Image (cartoon, rainbow, N blue to C red; front, side, top):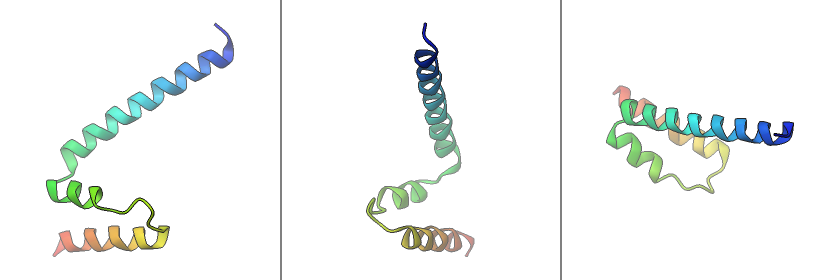
Length: 63
């Protein structure tokens, strides 16, 4: 197998493992309210607005 093909397979395996780990963390750590919050964020939102939304959400959980 060529080196570039091997690297591509390694990258794919890493991405699959990352997605599985991320899904597991979301399933354990995130509440339904957190998941709903994440699902309702506009994907076109700018970085600063996203940061403020997330910080406000985290702050609201502390209260």
